[in-house]
Image (tube, rainbow, N blue to C red; front, side, top):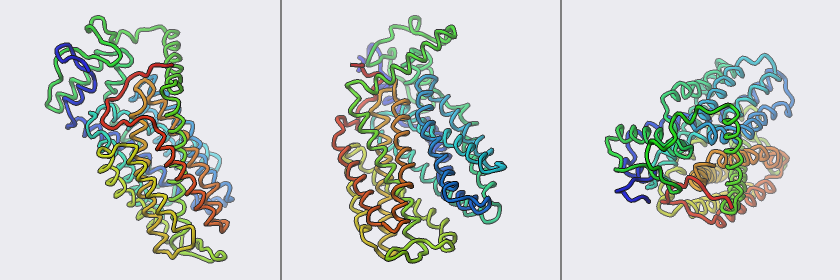
Length: 483
C-alpha cells in the first residue's frame, strides 16, 4: 500500500501492467508442465495390465507399479517445494521435468520388472514437483480475477489426460507399452528446453532481497504488455528498499559455501516455522485434511468408473467388468470421462471470483456428495455412468479451486514448502484409495465403498467451513510473522 509518490508494491505493479501477452506466455509454459504431469498419471490405467501379461506378474506386483509412482510423488512434492523456496521456482521446475523426461525414457527401456519399478518411482518423484508450476504462475498475475486465471491452468491437466488416453489408444495396440512411455516423456523434455527462457518469479526474488533482479523482471513484463510500471521504487508490505545501492544485488551470491549452507538451512526452518506458527497452524492442518479427502475422492471416482461401467459379469447382485469387455472399452472410458473435467472447470471459473474460494469449494463438495448418493444401491449402467461423470466433474473443480486457495493463503517465503507438504498429503489419499475403496468394490461391497466415499466427502466439506481466511481479491503476502 505504498504512496505512489514514493513507490509501489509488487501487487500494485502487477495490477498496473495487467494480464497481457506476458502472462499468456507464462500460462502456456506452466500449463505444459501440467500436461506432462497429467499424461504420466493417465498412463497408470494402461501400463499395469499390459506389463502384467507380458512378464506374468502377480496382482500385487502389478499394483506396485502404481504404488511406486505415488510413493515417488509423495517424497517429490515436498522436496521440490522446498527447492523452490530455497533455490527458486525456476530451478525446481527445471529439475522436476528433467527427472520426468529422463525417467520416462528409462522406463521405456526397462529390461525387467525391478528396474521398471525403480524408474517409475523416480518418475513419480519428478511428477511430485509439478505443483511448483502454478505457484510460479500465481506470482505473475494481478489479484483481480486471479481465481479464474489460476483455474485456466487446470484445463491443461484435462488436456493432458485426454492426450494421454488418445496416445495410448493409438500407440498401445500397434507399438506396445514401451513406445507409449517413451512418447509420453516428450512434453516434459519440451518444457525442460523452454524453461531456459522462463524468468524467475519477481516475488521470490524480492523475498531473497534481490530487489534489482525483481525490478528487471517487472520491467520486462511491462515492456511485453506495452504498459508502464508505477513511478518510484519497489516497496514491500514488510519493508521498504531505500535505493538500489543499498539493496542486495547479484553480488549477494558471492558468499562462502558455509554461509550459503547456513542460509539454506535458515530458509528451511523459517518456512517450517511459518507453516506451523499460530497464524497458519489451523489453516495448514485443514489444508492437509482437505487435500487428503479430495484426492481420495477424486482417484476413487476415477477407479469406480472403470469398476462399475462398461462390460460386466455377475458378482452376486453386483456387476464387475469382464476382462475382454474391459480391454475393449478401457481407452474409450478414460477418454470420455476425462471430458467431465471441462464443464467442472467452467463452473468453478464462473463461481470462484464471484462467490469466493470457500463458498465455491463448499458448493462443489455438496454437489459431489449428492451425485454419489444413488450408487448406495445398484443402478443400471446409464445412472451409474451419469452419477460418476457428474461426481468427477465437481470433485475435480473443487480440487482445482483448493489448489488456487492453497497457493494464495501461504506467504511467498513458504509457498513452495507449504504447497509441497499439502500435495504430499494428497498423494497419500491417492495411494490409500485403491487399497481400501476399490478393494471393497471388487469384493462385492459396493455399498460399503460408497458410504466410505460419502464420509470422506462430508468431512471435506466440513473442513472447508472451518477455514479462517478468504483469499478472494486479496493481495498475496510475502512473509507471515512467526508467533
